[in-house]
Image (cartoon, rainbow, N blue to C red; front, side, top):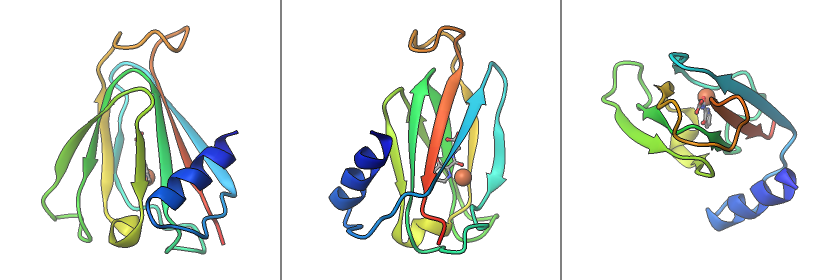
Length: 120
Ligand code: MD6
Ligand code: FE
């Protein structure tokens, strides 16, 4: 189901040849965050990465090509999707943390982020 969903999302954003091969699932509790990084361990660095946020609202930080580039913050709510494609595929980004108790989707609270990737 997730595979079909992200293939459709990829098409909507002009990526007509996206082949999802892996899904990394991160769970964030209160106060947990993810530092500035680029996702560059995939062999294929041009296919988009598509992420789905579930559960508590959080703050996603998007930078640029350089770690020192200026950043923007985006509020991500349960069900929101981020497509990092085109130039932004290799931009630095981070997750600043959740806003606890903003969703009752997950029994134990927190936020799940699914990042779906084409590896090669
Ligand atoms: C997060 N997301 O939202 C962390 N990476 O918890 C990521 O690191 C990410 O959302 C690549 C593409 C989309 C993402
Ligand atoms: Fe990432």
